[in-house]
Amino acid sequence: MYTLLLGPPGSGKGTYATRLSKKRGAPHISTGDIFRRLKEQGGELAEEVAGYMSAGELVPDEIVNRVVRERLEAEDCQESFLLDGYPRNLVQAQLLDQMLQAKGRTLQVAFQIEVGEETLKKRISGRRTCRSCGEIFNVFTLKPKTEGVCDRCNGELYQRADDREEAVANRLQVYGRETAPLIEYYEKSGILRQVAGEGGIDQALAAMEAVLNKGGGG
Ligand code: ADP
Ligand code: ZN
Image 1 (cartoon, rainbow, N blue to C red):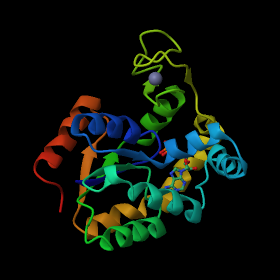
Image 2: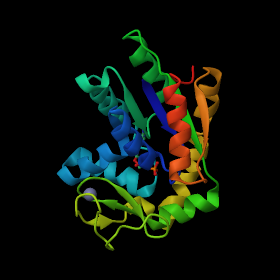
Image 3: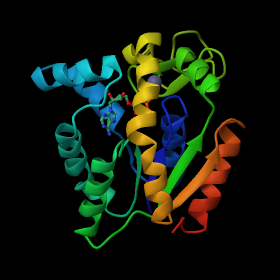
């Protein structure tokens, strides 16, 4: 099944996508994770991308689209995928539709994760990410067993550069301006499914799985 997760920064897209991916065997494609990995590798493109990210701005469509196109062509993405953080504006959404259309396929579900702004800010300020495996923790709500250490792989937990307060305000604005219009876009195409994101991880996951088990949104 072709699925995507829409939601503001801090809404839990990455956490849900990681778990759904493990349970259902669909590859989890996070453009944010791809760009963060790129940064670790270094180089000119990586520098450019990191500049946009730490300011809370979107990476230019041309770069993002190239990366996504390449990833979606891989063998493991032909039957199913879970997109997390892509598309983030209308240009990207249209390109995604075109890429799938060219293969005679369409998206089946767009989950919109709903979380209020106060919760978002708290979650983002508490978020810690594993440098090795990408697992996400929160010092308030989802503590690792040992402070600063990943439960899963013992990797080092760190705070993302764009989780600093200055960048967060900008990310929320960018979301409202660029990404929120996609809610209407997917509502019109009939595949939007809303998920309450404040009732706990398990509850939201169960709601998403129920939709996927029924064969999707559209
Ligand atoms: P969050 O949703 O919490 O902001 P992500 O890891 O999805 O976190 O994204 C982090 C940053 O990576 C974004 O603020 C942006 O700079 C960049 N990015 C990720 N996906 C895209 C995309 N589809 N288009 C443009 N920029 C992106
Ligand atoms: Zn880890």
